[in-house]
Length: 154
Image (cartoon, rainbow, N blue to C red; front, side):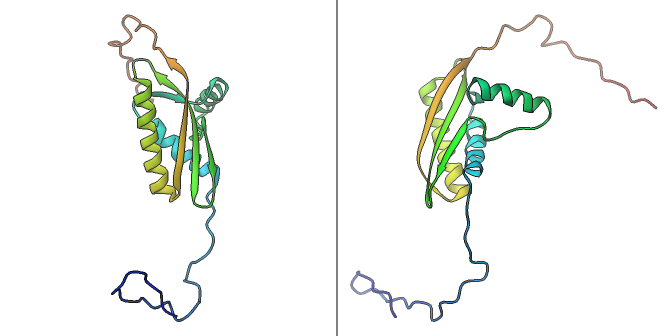
């Protein structure tokens, strides 16, 4: 059977002669957690993002960091369909960062990362900025103060 091209004067392209599956063909399922991690890593890379997640998830993240683990999907939820994905991100912004511009930059980064790495079309990225982190005043002497290096025990 031939492919019917609606454009006049186009050369018809024949269909493959056999219906045998290609080597390595099969079904690929990408979990919501995998998409959330890709989106979380992309969002954290944007300057002005202090942390992802709401208060309780940030506290759990601080505990994970203390024990040497990390959850790249914290503060990120993804709804995955067969060809499309929607992403929700909760975050804390760094004080002094214009919030609407930050949200736009995060959306652009998430769209690019998810579409490139996951291969699904991103239909929306919803961003909720829960808080703004205000760094405390610098303590006198801590910026220039250096700790002596420990010498190896021989």
